[in-house]
Image 1 (cartoon, rainbow, N blue to C red):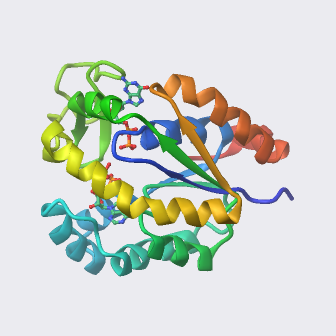
Image 2 (tube, helix red, strand yellow; image 1 turned 90 degrees about the vertical axis):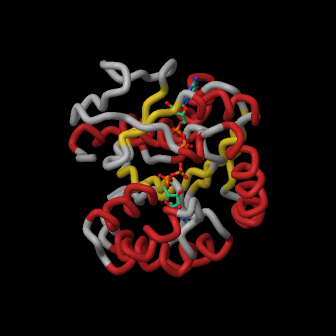
Image 3 (tube, rainbow, N blue to C red; image 1 turned 90 degrees about the horizontal axis):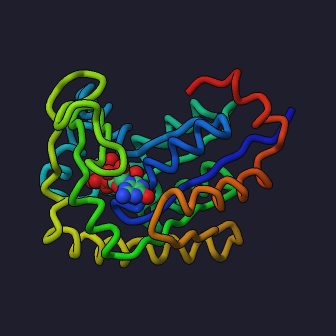
Length: 226
Ligand SMILES: Nc1nc2c(ncn2[C@@H]2O[C@H](COP(=O)(O)OP(=O)(O)O)[C@@H](O)[C@H]2O)c(=O)[nH]1
Ligand SMILES: Nc1ncnc2c1ncn2[C@@H]1O[C@H](COP(=O)(O)OP(=O)(O)O)[C@@H](O)[C@H]1O
């Protein structure tokens, strides 16, 4: 049997983690795990961790490390048979260390996108709040302006995505992410991609993963579910 593949993808808000994760999951047959989706599922199911997480998200804060690890690590235990890509976790060094004790990663993808590009993208980002589905009014617009493709419900723009809030958010991201990036660099698994467009970054990520993911597994991708 081929070795399972485990990766994380990091980058500031708007860097394209969700967009690129979907492409990776589709092309390489990995499970796409999203910390934001897990948090939203737990909020919807009113689990203990979900109720706690909601109080932080409402204030625009990161969910504390112990809540995130309590929420995520059991989900990873259910994934022992699968190759996966995690989007949105770890965001802090404590989370990276907790993940490191739970499993060995093969690759950490780091997206490095210019500030002006992030501002421009997030200005056009609209989301369906219940599912977390993300649209961009230029790059991937919904079929009907302002309406979610799947549910027909209205889309909203997050307060956090306004340009004024973004600069502070990005500064905070950099401070918190730096030790995580250094942690993966020291392990020799960090791959940084810098460009202004997902379509320019994607071929490089695809080439990297083709060399890392055993061929047998990508051949079997049609049989996988995600
Ligand atoms: N113009 C443009 N928008 C992009 C590109 N890649 C992603 N987006 C959009 O930018 C926003 C942020 O992307 P997303 O994948 O949600 O980033 P995340 O916050 O890192 O998960 C979304 O509205 C995407 O549709 C790109 O190359 N060009
Ligand atoms: N690894 C994490 N650590 C702390 N909080 C997290 C983490 N992942 C998600 N969250 C919380 O869930 C919210 C939604 O996550 P996500 O969908 O990744 O959104 P965003 O793109 O706004 O960061 C975050 O704003 C944050 O409050």
